[in-house]
Image (tube, rainbow, N blue to C red; front, side, top):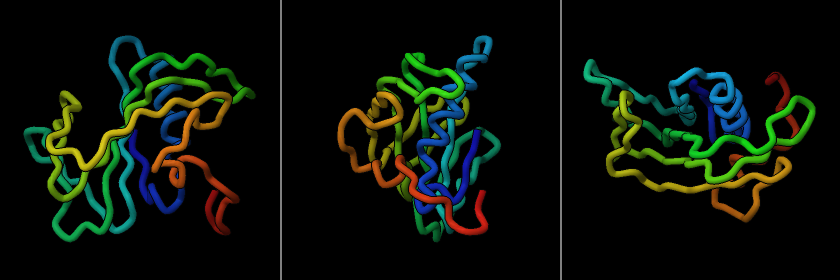
Length: 137
């Protein structure tokens, strides 16, 4: 699953929830999420290798669920542990078949308890969304 305009619109929490939901109903395949920042493009070649386009201003982000969510019920806050968020920059690559990242810019494990990060992280600004900007829904 992909999500664009990622960092500036704080869409990490939304993508984590989508990935958790899809993995809950997926039969055998592990579903991952790819977030792509504004003014950034992730190009994937015929061999399934992705790299940021030259001149990209931001990053791409790989969201991987390492454990099933402990709370994923409609109307209740999400809880899960060890969600892997990997940042790709101009020097990184991703194999879309295996989800392996070469030369990641960073990798963070996030745990969420009752809809809140369990500890502070540099990703908090992308995770916790304030009011929805006008014209975006």
